[in-house]
Amino acid sequence: MDTVTLSKVLDQAAGLPADEQEMLIEILQKRRAESWRRELAADVKQAKRELAAGKLKLEPHHAMKRRLRRSLKLGDN
Image 1 (cartoon, rainbow, N blue to C red):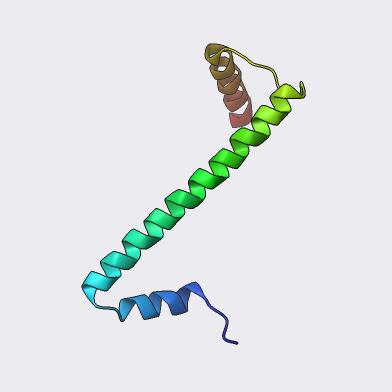
Image 2: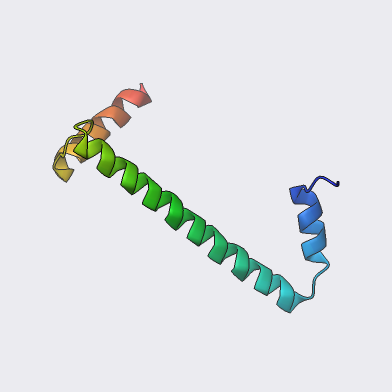
């Protein structure tokens, strides 16, 4: 069985007519968006479980932003 590589896929896609290339782009973008939605939903479910188990604590957004800014400043040194 041949190994699929990005280079091979790109070469094959380049051989498609322009309208099919556009269709391929649209299909890939929609699939990627759906995959991202599934990943995000799984992350949210995990965070809810961790919150319910007491592993996470709620924090006001301004406190989170302040903590993030501090950590970024410390990382620049």
